[in-house]
Length: 136
Image (cartoon, rainbow, N blue to C red; front, side, top):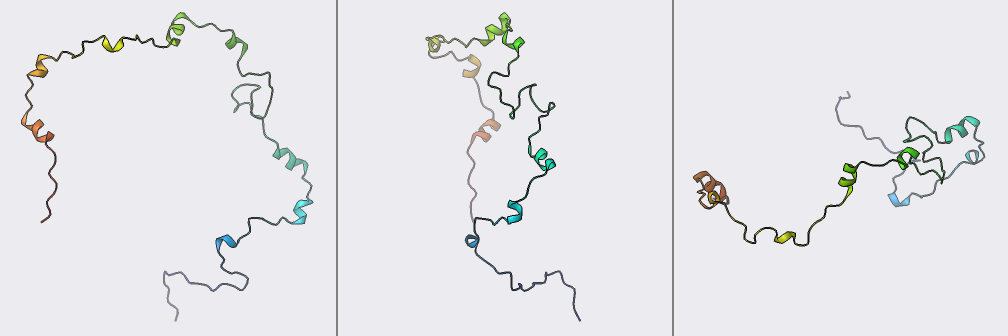
């Protein structure tokens, strides 16, 4: 009487199947002669062409499938635009003085509160290094 078990049943390999090493497989594939002589239909040829979609392109006339060497991607209005004085001011790089390190006194003054600080017992407890666990 057969029993139902959850273990998978191992099936013997058929005579046409054999196990092989991964390097025994050829990197070349054989293409049937019917596939080589196949003439693509008009529908297949139309599907093989890339689509130009207006909703997915950045600008009209700019697409990775369309090559126009005279088109720069910048509109005429943008190329003739003038920026405001504030934008010009923000566009300038920050100017550092050569003597910027010596603007402050060399030993900077320390406040009296920092000099008279007393750490609490909790701060001392937290600042102490942890003791390694002992193995008994």
